[in-house]
Amino acid sequence: MKIHEHCAREIFRKYGVPIPPDGLATTPDEAKAIAEKLGGQVVIKAQVLVGGRGKAGGVKLANSPDEAYEKASRILGMDLKGLKVEKVLVAKAVDIQREYYIGITLDRDRKKHVVIASPAGGVDIEEVAEKTPEKIGKVWIDPAYGLHQYECRKMLFEVGFEPQVAAKAAAFIQKLYKCVIDNDCSLAEINPLVLSPDGQIWAIDAKINLDDSGLYRHPELKALRESEDTDPLEREAHNRGLTYVRLEDGNVGIIGNGAGLVMATMDEVKRLGKGIAKPANFLDIGGGAQAEVVKNALEVVLMDPNVQAVLINVFGGITRCDEVAKGILQAIEGIELKVPIIIRLAGTNEAEGRAIMKGSRLEVAETLDQAAGKIVEWVSSRVTS
Ligand code: GDP
Ligand code: MN
Image (cartoon, rainbow, N blue to C red; front, side, top):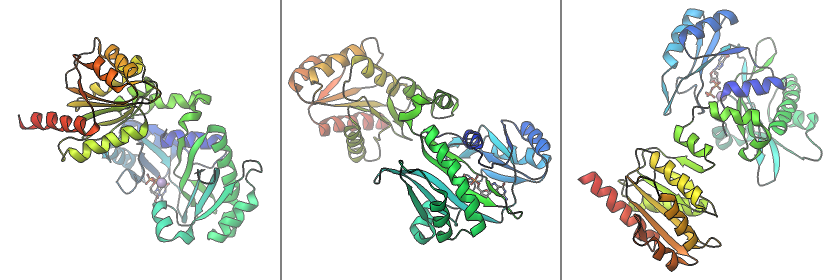
């Protein structure tokens, strides 16, 4: 789960990470008031869950409260990579002498957390890693021994941090690591960490991703999701406990059991769809596929006004197709089906499953190709009629 910069700043502050004072505004007047309180130069930053806001025009400096008003009115309401800006952060600006990158994430290959640092901060770190890998330093953290400052200092020094900055940054990384462990972060990143002319270092950007599987241990963090401006349908799906991701400009609802099967189904619709039929979502109902889950899944998929047809692809393994078929029939009882739905059942007891579906309001297919072909036919006829 991604969280907003202003939330990440609050969390980092608790761990003693130096972050310039700030306030959150939803109107230009509020932004002006915060700028007045902070005094001096401020930076106005769009609070949306995408990176690269600076380049996209979502981060602007303001030299006076009036200018803060003006910049905030330009950023509020703007479209940033498809997301509408509803809030801006107004933070005291820092004079930048040099920008660095510092992050901690999980290295799944090594099964350890890894500290990543670079003296080439402020820019896209993936690009630095690709073009100038010698400017990226790493320290893997052994969970039994923890993180030692000297390891970080050595790495920072070797990768090009000035000695006095390396010492401060190493202490800083300790705080970040504690934050990662305490909160089950899958990523904690500061880009850029900056050195100001007076020799201080500051985190002027803050990014935290939380491990969804650890959220149950942090009810206060889980509550952040409710306040996030994510896609309303995704929020609805998550509230119902579904694994659902909405895609832009799709028109075919996809439901399946197993993430791999759902992805393969999406690919097939896209491949046969000739640009006319496109997957509108990912939705994995998982192994059991009980009626209640299927019902929730169908309801959510049908809430998307862009959906013109739905493909349900179920592979019966341990869960038998006849059980799934019964579940689906129960699920569609009392649901108004405004768009055609096709279901492909394969695997254990597929013939029984298909027999149960016969005569229902759903069309039944034997293979994925058949099902996807039918979907494309439906969507195309809607487009041409
Ligand atoms: P991102 O583009 O979404 O990563 O947003 P950042 O918070 O990293 O801001 C983008 C850029 O804006 C930074 O790399 C800085 O160049 C600039 N910026 C942000 N805050 C400040 C500040 O306090 N002072 C100055 N001088 N520049 C800032
Ligand atoms: Mn940044």
